Amino acid sequence: MFQPYQQPTPVVRPRTEDDFPACAAALIAVHEVDGYPVEGVADPDAWLRPAGLMNAWVAELAGEVIGHICLTEPTDTDAAAVMFRETVEGAAVDIAVLGRLFVHPEARRHRAGELLTRAAMDHAASAGLRLVLDAMEKDQAAIRLYERLGWRRIGTTDHDSGHGLVPAYCYVSPAP
Image (cartoon, rainbow, N blue to C red; front, top):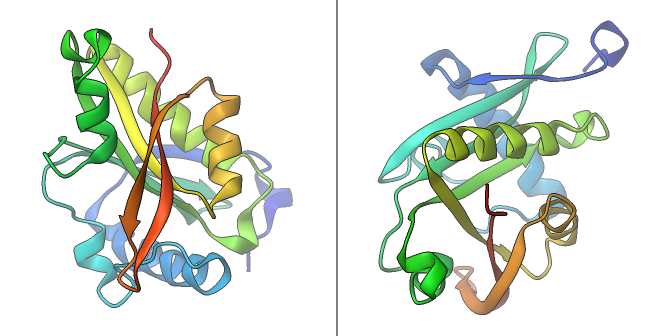
């Protein structure tokens, strides 16, 4: 499917309307392999357009969309946002929620997840925002990525998987 020898490093760029079919296909492939996301696969287009969407990016490899990430406005139901806002540090800054990060299973090992996360972090830093997120305990690759990039665990929560509650960890991005 992907011919990485043509382009060894993914290119990250803002998401466009034309990217939705490829993003949806990648999302479904990720769900089949990883069980992520636990919701949204029945209607990928809606899941990729969450309420409060601020920005979204895709990663391309050899001209094909292979990954996605976005930032949303925090809500009262975002556990990480609520936890961080309750701290002195979190009460003093504007925040956004990082989410919907995925990379097509056939295109992994090219640092697309890291590049997407760094793009979102760079954007947030330039906008004066701190980022928060929650990662389900089962998603160990994502947890390793965030921790390697300096994200700090601030607590735990339970995520409603649609099949019951599953443990999740809440994180905040490094201070700029």
